[in-house]
Picture (cartoon, rainbow, N blue to C red):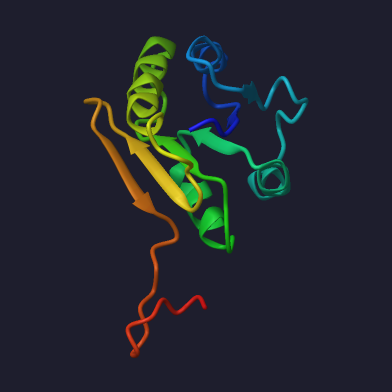
Length: 136
C-alpha cells in the first residue's frame, strides 16, 4: 500500500513523521494551510488528490465518505482526545495491518485503544432484491 496520507488537524504532526519513517507519503492539514477548514470542504482535496484521510473524527467523516461513490480510504483512530504517544502507537497498528494491502479504496480502517484494527468496506454495499450491489 503506497497511497499518500492526509492527517487531520485534530491529530499529532508525529503521525506524518511515522508515515515517512515507514516509507509512506504523508502530509498534515496544517502543512497544507487547511487548518480550520470545515470538514465537507476537505473532501474535494481528499478526493481529487487521492489522499487516505487519517482522523479521530469518525462521527463527522463517516457520513461524508458514505456520500462518495469512490473514495481513497479513511483511517479512524477511534478514541478521541488521547495523548500524542498513543496516537502514534495506534497509527502504527493501523499501518501494520494496511501495509500489505494493495490500496484502501472504499475502505475504512478503525483502530481502537487496545490496538485492535477493524477493516471494512465503506460505504457498506447495499444489496437489492436481485442480490446485486444496489450502487450499480
